[in-house]
Length: 336
Image (cartoon, rainbow, N blue to C red):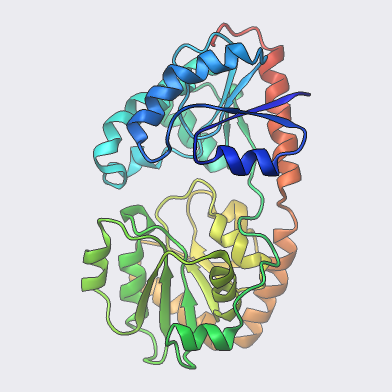
């Protein structure tokens, strides 16, 4: 198999250095402008693909050229924008056009979980037998030389308090407002740590939070790795997830997990988490308080999480992706 990767200006230098055995083709577009990226995908990418004489084009981020001139596979990670349009904001109009178009114009659709597959079939009208599932592997590498806990606590002014960690974009479907409310019902020495880039929804979240909630902004891999390891537990209260990568990252580091019993999260966590109704703030508080106070439960979840995490690897993701390529190339569909 010959692999050709098409990259924009920012990604091109690092991909050339990192990808052995692959041809990296530079596409003259900047990642900083979403509009320009979309235009390049519709115009420059098909032309570059034809010049490279590839047999199949894999679009990895939800959208695809309307007219590619060759068979396509498109990864649609989720259709959360259908359930929570406010999450995409002004971009929702473009997403609502481009994602269904990509699904129609691709021979195969790849996604991260069975839950996402069900949503793609339901909301986009894609035939179930055209959707392949390729669960993800771990996010930040293990080990990532984490910042030591003592240094982390001092630098972030966390003291000796028990830490509840959540790693979630500050967007409505992540349900952080209910988690913040739930933590407010816990013993006073508990601190909720919320890393992640700022969004337009952060000010409202901050107004509902007190001293016990620490918004860290973006953190590097070493700091994030250290936070996972320092946390007494990890909590993900999402109302929808296409996969739930932070749950996998937490389990890989032996961090006990509590999360919503919705979407893809049970697929990822299996029997290695305690679950709650994400719409019930009282239940969230009860589950997290139980986890903080029960050392034996945390031990069991730590052991179960490490075992559950072994089921996921990028090698398995790659194998499922290649299988989708083979189905696309073998298919008689005229989609291109």
